[in-house]
Image 1 (tube, each protein chain N blue to C red):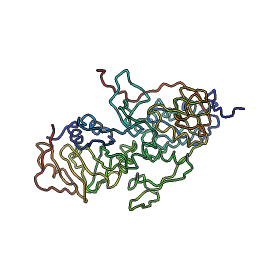
Image 2 (cartoon, one colour):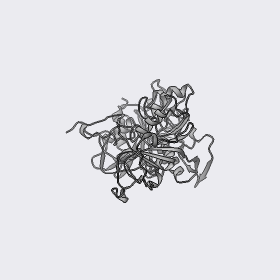
Image 3 (spheres, rainbow over the protein chains, first blue to last red):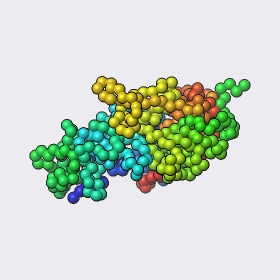
Image 4 (cartoon, chains in turn purple, red):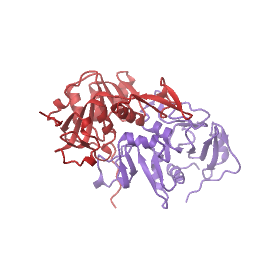
Length: 219
Length: 234
């Protein structure tokens, strides 16, 4: 069975470490915040200028001056800091953010990512994604392994306009966890019940499969 | 003698001198922290062929989006314009030109512009369409692209409080691009919720010193929210 969006988020949350500063992109990455293990502390960075993003406000707490990068109303967590956009991207570009999780249309075997533009179809802009992939120490991409036509999104070389080059370290899809290194995808884990053959069939780029591939574990 | 008193009493006075073809740098992130009344005044004045520099372009009927209705914007430099159908229409029909710019690069372009730094190298955008036509230089084995900074004839800014001298304090995430925009305008106009007397703001709490600010006006704000997201109480 392929993973649900929640399960993908849950699996990504296992990558979090105590004391991490983390930027979560829109979509599945946002859900990761719901699965932070109880025994660790992480601080969420929102690139519009908030370090220490808290939960959504109650109806009474809603404040138009308090939003996240997805333009949703949020609260500040205990110990949060607020700053301007240049300061926000100084921490991103300066490599101070430990982990960035974002979605993508395509990733290739060299770790290049396309996530912001489909020529003649979707031209909304890159927002902060190019800064995040150029600056973060560690980047995890979440996406479905194949598109709705069954075509692989893990390619030899991206076909869409790039967001960044040679930057993605890890990918969590609905089928697998893969590491990107030395010009190839390395299969680390598979979704429960998903055979390795299916992952091989749905990975267009170079895929290395070594030994028995364990199933992902969920509590 | 006005001395350092920057307060003006009408929007007309606040935006006086804005001409067709000017570059206007605007603070705000989405609809958060936008100078609502100054944008409305630009619409009222009907100034044309503007180049607008802002992270976003509002929505169809609010924020900078209202300047699209009468086709006042010739070009927009922004990181994300996905909330605006009118914009997409004018882009596809070739009536408006867009320079999509990574958000951090955009912030740094304003910051550098205001600081008298004409350009800077960044890894952001290297190897992507953003890098097309730009100089590439390696530092410590990593390639970077040259980005030029931005200044404008006008900057329009929204702050929470100002004193009469133009010292500014921003509130929560309504800060965003506002302090950067404030530094990058030849004429910087600030619309605020509250004007206080000099001395009422502690010097240590001021985010933007008055030296960057030319005009201050007290506004009233709708503060529209794009996405109200809540959790149940208890």
